[in-house]
Every structure is written in C-alpha cells, then in structure tokens.
Length: 301
Image 1 (cartoon, rainbow, N blue to C red):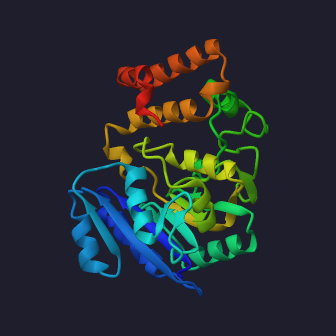
Image 2: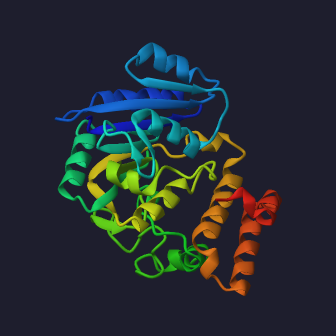
C-alpha cells in the first residue's frame, strides 16, 4: 500500500504543471506515492508534455472539460477510492488533491504525511499556501460560508474587524497565519484526505463544476466525525487561478457553487424571508445566468 495518492486536474496550465510535477518528483522523505494527472481537454499541449517528460505519471486525457470535481473523482477512482464503504484495500493511506499551479518544497509531502500520521482524529489537512508575492492565500484556511458568515464577509464587517473571531470567520483572519488550528475547510489546491474518511464520506460532489466542491467535501468529512486542520509548519507556493482566470465561466461558477452549497447545507434551516434575501444577493452577484439555477433546484444535489 502506498502512502499517498496524488490527483492533479489540469486545464491549459502546461508550464505550471511541468514545474509542479518536477517539484513533486523532487520530494524527499521516507514515503511512497502514486500520481495521476487528469487533463480536461487542454489545447496547450499539456497532455503531450506529461507523456513525454513524465512517463511515470498516470495520465487521463479527457475529450472535454468536465469540471474540477468530476475530473478529480476520475483520478481518485483510478487510485482505488470509489465511494462510501467502497475503497480498494490497496488504495493509498492518503489522497491528495493538488493544483497544477502549486510547487511543493522537497520535504512538504513527507511532513504532511507525518503530521496526519500523528493525529488520527484529523481527516483533512492543508499547509500554508503563499502567493507569488509571498502573501498568504487566505483560502487555505476557511470557515463555512453560512448565511451569517457570508453576510459578515460581503457586508464589509470582515474587512473592518478582521481580528474579531465572529466577523473574521470567513478566512480565519482572527488567527495568525503561522498558527496551527482547526478550521472548517482547507482549499482544494492542496487538500490531503485520510483514506478512512473518504470511505465514510464518499468522493467529491459532481454537481459543482469548479469552486465549492472542496468546501462541500470538508463539510461532509466533518459530518463523518473527522477534524479539518490547517498546518502552517509546511508552506507551499500557489500561483492561484492560473487556469480559471482564462475562463469567462469562472465568475458565474463561483456564485453557482455558493448557491449549491447553500441549498445543500443551509436552506432547510433558513427562514423564508432570509432565504429570499440570500437568493436576491446571489442573483445580484452571479448575474442573469444564475436565474435558471435559482429556478431549477434539480441542478443541485
């Protein structure tokens, strides 16, 4: 049994993917891993580059861009993770979702494995992610976007009172960036998940296309009884939105993801007047294209 199974979903980030793979294969430490790249119909030669320069990688070249969670699930299934109560005994001890626009230091993977080995109560962990300018990628430690937490964030209260535990919940800005702490979710750019947790909670929800699926997975993994932990002793570089910045769908899909997440986890406990206010705010943010999603709840799971 390998220690780590890594899935990288790629869309038109060939050069960043090359650097990411080189950093992974430059890793040091006493551990074993398998790696699958799932390419979502890139037209920049990404798949050919992987075949040519990294023949040891398990490559899946999709004919279409099928989205982030569906592509990740293809990679996870190839590694032996299939769903609730259906995980191959030979599947790695941990699954890692890794973005192609990340670069891992030589000891990062080994240290993250050791950390989770020392804490069997932790089902999900992520490192400190830093952007190209050296600043913290705030998404690497998050609170769930409940209606109240989202209101604090988008009303500007978070910016006014970032150190307040109530108002700073969205990106955990109340805590020092080098403080190890339990969070609601880490980001899918580097999301390491325990095999047993996947067996209990299942794979990613393919109702999402991009954005939100990592929050949803963390939510379900926490419901299954596992903790989610931010571990800043390990730092990973993240270019951020290297692929999504090219896509006109990105803005729409972000707000569509928030709609799916809200309906799935919070609609049932939300008073109707507040529900209408939330839908109005989502429509305002997401634009007219979100109206069909609001009218048709069957699009969500």
